[in-house]
Length: 135
Picture 1 (cartoon, helix red, strand yellow):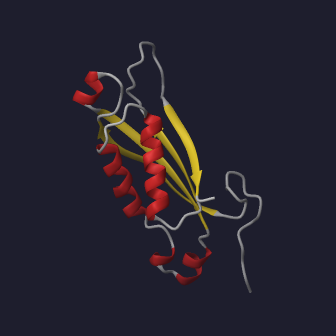
Picture 2 (cartoon, rainbow, N blue to C red):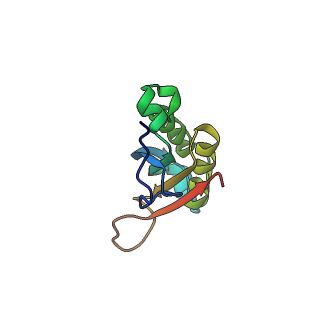
Picture 3 (cartoon, rainbow, N blue to C red):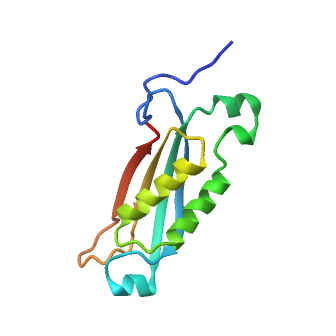
């Protein structure tokens, strides 16, 4: 008997992929357009959703047949601490490209939060979200 993921799952790039989600990867980055942002740094928080078929890993119980989320966290953490980038859009693009190049995924969603962005009015969060795929 073959079991497949339910087709048409909302948020899936092709409707039949599963997802691995890792939220809240936090590190100090030196990104921004202002000198004080690059000098002093600030926290950045990244959420990642990997889109892939998890059935091979689920049926085999083999880590090599999925995306190792510990390695994913290390990769993203290193990119946040690297750079610097002027824009969080550029940080998100770099993360997405690195994930696609390092993990067996069809697509990745990346959200970069900049909770201490230099904004003069009270705010809850600033974030960019992008989806990149192999297609």
